[in-house]
Image (cartoon, rainbow, N blue to C red; front, side):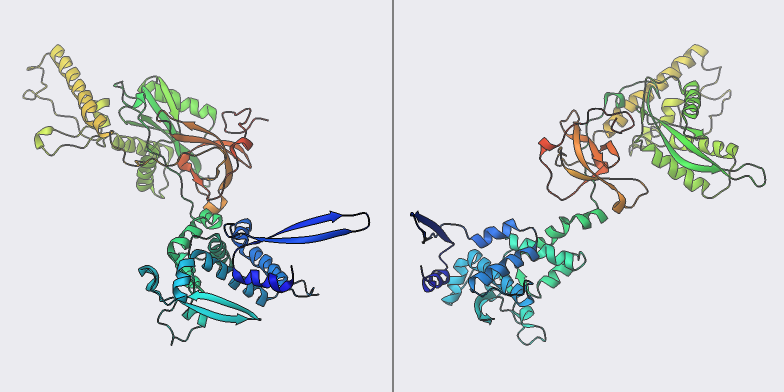
Length: 515
């Protein structure tokens, strides 16, 4: 095949050219012949090339070498690709994509026919330009900016669709070269050269898929709230099943001149059934200190059947009351202990069920009703000869029966009002995608900026009774840790195959991989 026939096939735009090399071997020499076959139904090799490139600059360099081959230039001594060659590569890729995505519109424009309404508003036209001896027929947006003092590319930008991989590579390059610009800035920069259909949605997708931008504003995962455990809805005595957590530190001062303040903590016990709160002052976080305040708790509230640790919502309420009440005041140990008891009484006097609108319904149910029969912050009722609970009108046995009936009335109100209030999901009411093994996540850490959160890969997941994943094990640089999914943020990257992730052989209680 001679060079002229090759140029005719190239200009026809029928499709990729496939060369079949046939060799006939003889005793003295080898004859080589080339057979050219052109297929129309084959996909365009240049569009396939876009999917194989990981960056926009790499794609332009490859196209620059292809252009050198097409133009049949002699071997240049300069290996570095010039800026004009990169621009030529960009325009050639745009022309290929326009003919592939707007093939019917291209024909209509050549015949001066009307387009679909969403394209006709842009008033597109075919612009013929010449660059370094190469002619391009590109579709540009007409618009109304002919007399505007801006460059020609901004007056009549190139028309492209946002569905191609070439546009995604171009937007990623635009986003990174302009210091991870936001959506509005990207759209403004994009329209200086290209008019992209659905540009805002495409730029938003690129910004959200940027790992660097995601680490500055990570979105923690969530899952539909699971069902309440049996310990939360059982009618048992207060603190039979409870949870414990710590808050602090708080500093106490000694009445000795020159002595520095002492760091202390507060242990928060929460009853699972009545939401009653018990606070204990702790001098440190050692095991002996824990056993000491736990003995004090058992002596005052009774031996619990189950004790859960961490993730108690009452810690936030207790710490808020303590900080608002104490502030920067210099308190002694005795003063801080007194303040803890007052905060405990305040928390146990909060209504756990909303009162009705009828004034005859009585006072709202509080944890104090389930502890002593009344809110802890109210004064005791006066007793006298004319009182309801006087000895003249009520015998001791009758009084005991009345108090028992009153306590049972509170528990009946608890089972009707408080349990019914737990029916709704105040948050996490929508089911989300389950976390899978192999996903890359960042782990939320308190008092640490998001840029310094640990990055890890999920190695195991734990599903609840609703078959939803709520807990996951994550392998980080410091070992394997176990976290709830609302402490994890899924990175917008492709994950590794599941077969490559292995479950750790041993996992100790401290959340680290045993060696």
